[in-house]
Length: 203
Image (tube, rainbow, N blue to C red; front, side, top):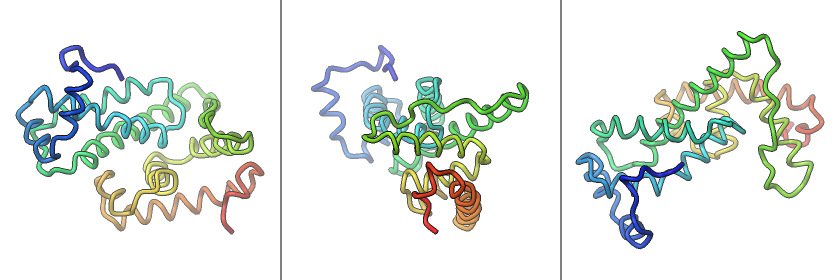
């Protein structure tokens, strides 16, 4: 995502800023310091991009979604109370991703069209078999409800702990467990019938 011109800084200065203790960055963010906003963007943009891609698969609007995450974060920076910036921005990322999933589903219902074909979501991976499995995975996830898909993705694709997923989704641990169990059962039953995914699903 392009950085706003007002936040631009030379590379050597950005490196020094990134070395600031996280609690100092949080305090400076709350004070609306430009260097802290630069540092926040530099450190957390790759995480936000990765999380959105893991949840959504390929999305033409990825740059816009990343910008939306940081716009919401900066608008709510006064609410920042702890020093866990990654979890804080992760929660905004999950909300933006969930809304994008629901917009996709409404669009499909209104147009009576089939789900959008998933392009090369894993083009950097080595083998055609893995690329085919990735496309099959996201085609199947496109049929899953937004809340279950988010929980499933964070657990099995991003590899997060249950407590972290609960924090990012702003729900209880028991709710996260229910969503993951439901999503895993739904996914496994269908993946076993797809030859591209069957070998990746444990019996």
